[in-house]
Amino acid sequence: MAINREDMLELTRRMTLKRNCFDRIAGAYLDKEGFVDGTFNKHFHRLSLKDQQINLDIAKAVPFSDTNVQLKEYVFGEADRKPGSIWQLLMALKECGLKNDAMLDVFYEEFGKIYRSHGNYAVYFFHGSYDVPLKASDKESLWESEEVYQFLICAVCPVSGDYEPGEPECGFLFPAFKDRSSDTDRINIFQAAGTFGKAGGVEAILFSHK
Image (cartoon, rainbow, N blue to C red; front, side, top):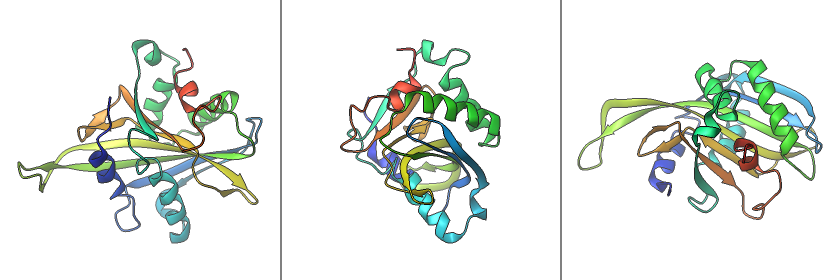
């Protein structure tokens, strides 16, 4: 199940200060044992321009990564989509636009139970929407909109000092942006080079029944 690189590049073109597709950012700081030290939840446009750029770079790292090498597509089977699943939680977080702190706390808690890190880290969540334009037969964009793709990007970064984030180690894009459309049965999981095979990674969290 290959990811189309052009689909990912189409998304990243909306991840700039002038063409920002994000409306909300939320996250948590966790210690290496997985306990939450603090959380935040803000309207993206209320951040300073400097902080907007820092966070855009974090979010963009997921879809801009090496397609089908660092960023791979996974399918949620029927067992993965049962009530109480992480898939159900992600669907709810997408629908509420990250405005439900209680649901976010559940995710952070579940994440901290499984993810293993050598030091303190942060889980960043971004909610975005992209008005997908129709494409003509010559692949030029038309003004008409085909659909509004609402999505979540999660990025996990090591932190140091006063919660200063390092380069993202892993994360995901949900729902998958497949054939220029939303696919809620699929998710694109990111794993940075040099961290493959790490115990307690994102895949283990999303598909914990396996």
